[in-house]
Length: 227
Image (cartoon, rainbow, N blue to C red; front, side, top):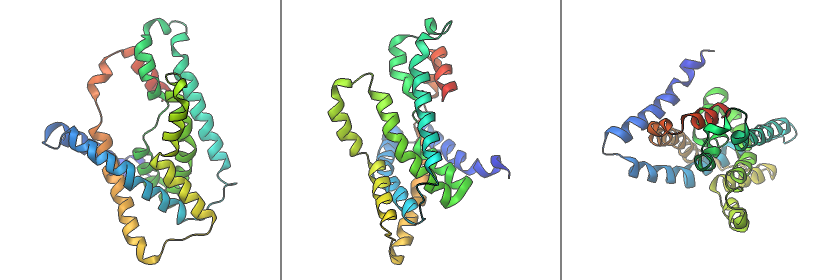
């Protein structure tokens, strides 16, 4: 299988989003609204549909869930330990590290879903949806816990209201209860899912800020290496 050729369409959309945002009137303000639409509506529908339309054996995906949680915990531990590494910590500013550590372990769901769909089809979408469901709470805790421990109650409330988690949780519940989408609704839901992947990739490209990589080079290389 030629993976470069297989993944070229997805990375072309990322590049297209970057170029459109930088060199046309469809600037960052426009893409912020697109990203909001995808995040709060299109992606939850895609995740729900991906889980509902395929039988799910939680026992069979338990090893994947365990691997995802282990990788997440490892990334969090490595990211926050950077200032204490010999010969490296002295080159990492504390303030920039506190703001940038989460880059090492937070993932882009837009890109992950698109790649899973391209590489493994509907089964890949189902597996990545389950992985996102268990990893989003973990990486969110890792991102905000050191800075906002006193705000734990507010954080938990926001986590429960996360649209991706709502889409995944409702999809898992519907799957386990044997719910299936009506035939007449399938085409519309499928089109929303397809649109979410294309718009999500373009929004990811529009959000790229290459100029920020020049600041704190040692920290940048470190967190990207962990990622």
